[in-house]
Image 1: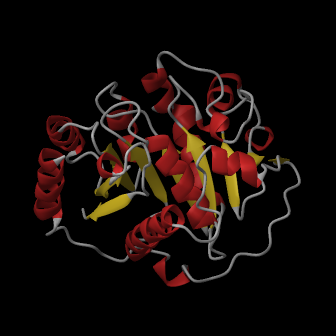
Image 2: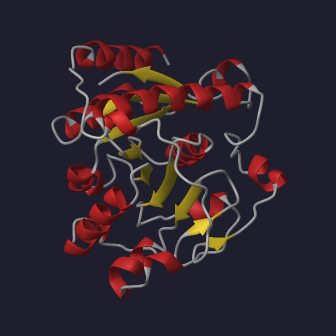
Length: 277
């Protein structure tokens, strides 16, 4: 744990001098979007029991996990707004370090605010799993939109949470890197990014060290969060991930998932965010 903390602190110090500028549209970030009426988007009401069982807690009130995600939301939204950004990626060095859980809870937490809507996109196309977080069977999603020209509106799902919409990954795609950089993906991201003024896109991406997908997808992103896990992520993996990502996409910071787990038995605490980039 001490080695991982040292690596995170070194990254924080190295990135601390990064400049920030206000981008276009930043003057409109407080505009409240009109109420949403979901007509074509599939609405699936997920029970509180299911969400809590899957550890999707950001939409509820109270508790250390909820407050942890609220703090992460505040820090991330501040950085996005001051730069005029609205496309965020979430990744990790390796599998099973909590990137998908972090992406889901962060997206849900941001969608609880009335100043923006949030679209979470499962772009981990080799192992799409976001739909399972909401207790959903595998449904058509991003892969089907890109490969089969499935209408986007017929793949979106609103799980009854705030101003939150989900685009599942769809069927698994072995050669996902080529698909994520295809001309159709370029057009889709551009459309999603600009269709609604107050929308934030959150992409759940594959791990950095298991494929080149994140690097290939970097040009589509405004910023990236790197999720690590206490007791699992090695210092070398953090350093290697940051080295690979350097220059490809701005890293907002690192999220230390399950912080405190080693001192609390099998119980895990909420995320801790180390800025900044």
